[in-house]
Image 1: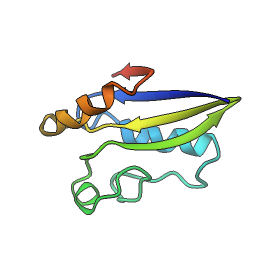
Image 2 (image 1 turned 90 degrees about the horizontal axis):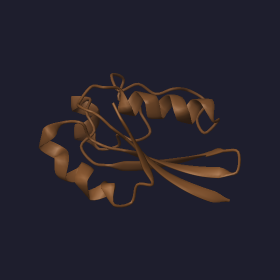
Image 3 (image 1 turned 180 degrees about the vertical axis):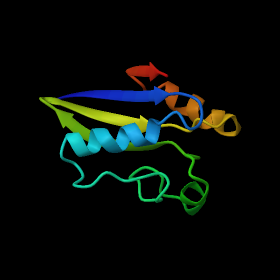
Image 4 (image 1 turned 90 degrees about the vertical axis):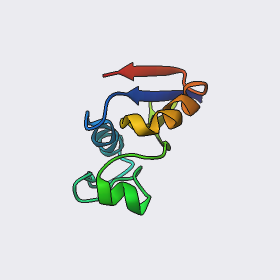
Amino acid sequence: MSYLNLGILAHVDAGKTSLTERLLFVTGVISRVGSVDAGNTQTDTMALERERGITIRAAVVSFAIGDVSVNRIDTPGHPDFIAEVERVLSVLDGAVLV
């Protein structure tokens, strides 16, 4: 099996975490799509992230597409947390810029 480390980079409230939830749902990892507003997403696990509705710390979730294991790295969009985005750039095989 091959691996792909994929990041989606965008400004705050662009939908990175929501897209991650959809990818996990479509690939069968989760049975119900979480919501940032409801505070029940797979990647926003800190209380402050759930309270404010933003990603503060990068988080990884994995799903398979065919024989490729995709490690989706969810990154913050708020400029106050740009260091967290910079921290993960070196491990990405590819990035989608929104």
